[in-house]
Length: 221
Image 1 (tube, rainbow, N blue to C red):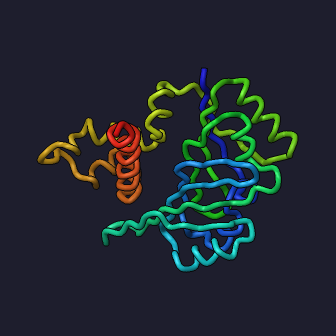
Image 2: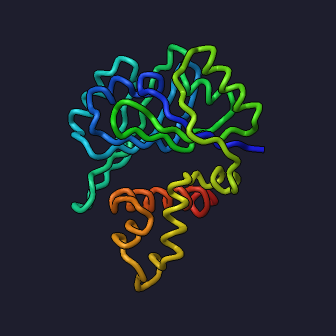
């Protein structure tokens, strides 16, 4: 049975360490990570900082081979956001390699201070989680467990690529009538009910909806 693990790790032991050090104000949310032989390709959203400085830091980072901007979002009301694909050279033992070897999936990884990552990983079994734990011990990684549990609906989250935070936002919005015409609640009211900022809620709804569409209607086409 699958197991969900949430943990924090220093930025230096994950990805984009040099870039985050140069731009600590930038908020990063990894959507997915593709691992290969010696190379790791994270797809992530960036917001809240100076994009010119951030992109310069990406290009100056000696561990990064390629940077591609896939999408830009700006509505004049919330922080501008950009979606990137980066090819990162994983020459040394690292946590992404540990996740890939354990056949696990990074569901969410966020960094908001340039110092650490908060990561949510779905492991296919307890044995795979143990393999990951042993790898971290062998390489002396500073992994701080926050929560380990069995998800109620791992099939849905895995199939639709929806994170726990995105699912919470989508369910709350649906139940409050946010998707009704006319709407029965506003984004401001809904954000206050959940206890997050309007910007954060807006981002979770957009990304969660996009993930569901990509893995249902668009995927089936």
